[in-house]
Image (tube, rainbow, N blue to C red; front, side):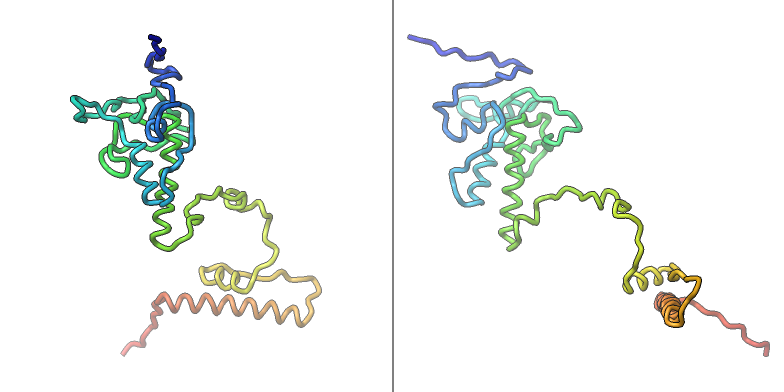
Length: 224
């Protein structure tokens, strides 16, 4: 009778709790320790898929006479699902949130997720957003975060402004800015008229804003 070799379960070892996955079903293979993988759903409906992946991420419990009690891997720097030892760096983009004892809700666990189950948890978050979008008739693409553009990071990367729209002038003058077009050495009549009209419009817009905000104007009354 041949005996199969079982690797020891050592904290910090990459072979922690690694078993032969050839004869495992879908759920056991997803919950066991191993390399990063994408969980393949058995169902095609998003709500049933959500129940599947929550079962995968549910923390492992101890059993006594097939009765579950307490949590098996509720220890610091141990995966609450498979028990793999994992210390996350604070700057790691793949660092998962604190696991909850019911995945979607409950109190936070003392443990964490390993790299494999952190990836599955990211897959669970995206699926939950998809279900939420479907319930409200929204597009799922609206929930995907976008990287900030260079213009957002550096507003001056586009260079200084050389022209303003009429709406820009009205908006700036309403908050107190004085917008004056550049004057040329030899100003034509049409150019002078255009410049004076802009100055008049900015002053009128500022006066309108002050009146709207309720500026108080006091007058001196003559002595009786």
